[in-house]
Amino acid sequence: MVMTVGVSSHDYGNALSKSILFFEGQRSGKLPPSQRMTWRKDSALRDGFEIGVDLVGGYYDVGDNVKFNFPMAFSTTMLAWSVIQFAKSMDAELPQALDAIRWATDYFLKATSVPGFVFAQVGEPYGDHASWERPEDMYTPRTVYAVS
Image 1 (cartoon, rainbow, N blue to C red):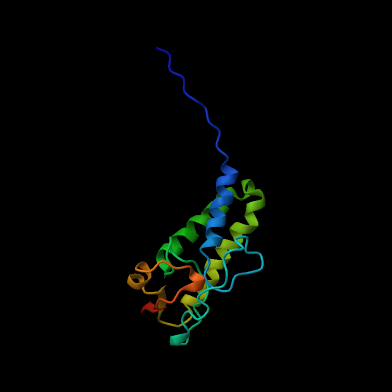
Image 2: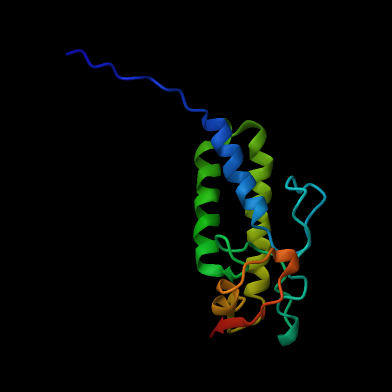
């Protein structure tokens, strides 16, 4: 019996491009003109305003409209680390990767702008997870959670 193992080639550049594009799809806030996912529009433009803090921006978590800052920090760290390690291989995706990192870090600066507090989450997960809606159309509460 002869077994042959198929050799398949993987397009890692395409996978990288789609990974960076995923970050753009998860953006919250006022989207820039460079937004490549043209079907996405501005969303959650009043996050934090009820408590007097501008928390517009950042990324939604997975497929919902909640911003969980700890997972966002982890994914941003991993993206930044990959840029440090592989910037020379990223070619055309490097500017988009840097933009994705900047989108998160600008938001994290807002989330730490009040001395003694870290705003760790925006959005009410139970209500959000019970509804299925685009961020542009959301009507679920945008409760802000902080740690001190």
